[in-house]
Image 1 (spheres, each protein chain N blue to C red):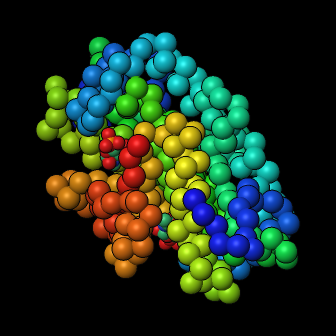
Image 2 (cartoon, each protein chain N blue to C red):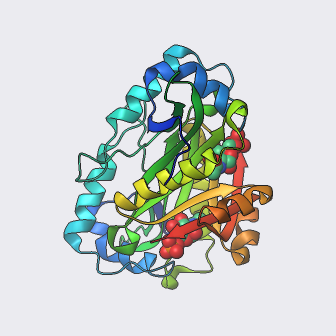
Length: 156
Length: 156
Ligand SMILES: CC(=O)N[C@@H]1[C@@H](O)[C@H](O)[C@@H](COP(=O)(O)O)O[C@@H]1O
Ligand SMILES: CC(=O)N[C@@H]1[C@@H](O)[C@H](O)[C@@H](COP(=O)(O)O)O[C@@H]1O
């Protein structure tokens, strides 16, 4: 995983509220998420650990930030799911990937995917999955992913 | 959700080891999952609660069993994911659905899907998603799901 100069990658912190909300709005509806709600979700995410190994987080919300200004340039998460299949295997779910409008065209999305995938495999995943629109398939192929099945949904 | 006569639905228990392992083998590789591993994953699943509401489990492993013999006829799970998007929304992930060879053709799959979907929406999900093969799309459509996107994967 190589990050362009001037950027670093780290776990989400409470101070990232505005940048994360703004960046996620590129992906979908964020709605009226207050700073208080954001902070308490970050606390919750930091509190949930994986089966047996207390150094492995179930939620791994991550940001790429500008090294100088700490501005959020990209955001994403990998959620680790403890299964029974594959001898009690772990499946990683990559979720909520977004690159800020101000930082596009710098391959930050690819760097973030590489980071989250490495994190998942280091944490013991036998596979990592994600769902995306037809139009993003090419991008995820460049990140080493391949089409495997159909995503279906039910909404309230 | 209506269950055919002679069956009931409940959370997985430790005594379900053999029946669950046998039933999951219909779906995919289970491998050499020992009774000890099974029991400790069940304990782990029972210990992880959702954000704020301590009565909501993050993992909801469920079985349909024969009311008389307690034999496992079907198994499935819904994992609740705490997000930031959609005002701190919850997304339900339906996973590892399998119906035992001895109990097929009784609409147990549909009953299980109904149960897990109800559980997800009652727990606050704004949407519930699942991934499946092309050949199962028709079945999930009958359960109220519709095709929405592409699943991609990366394996070790
Ligand atoms: C790889 C990736 O980032 N996929 C995202 C998914 O994580 C996100 O939850 C969803 C939001 O869509 P929604 O607002 O319709 O739920 O969009 C995309 O499928
Ligand atoms: C709705 C449903 O039950 N989908 C399952 C998924 O939950 C399971 O994890 C996977 C196992 O496949 P694998 O053995 O290739 O990981 O198969 C199917 O996609």
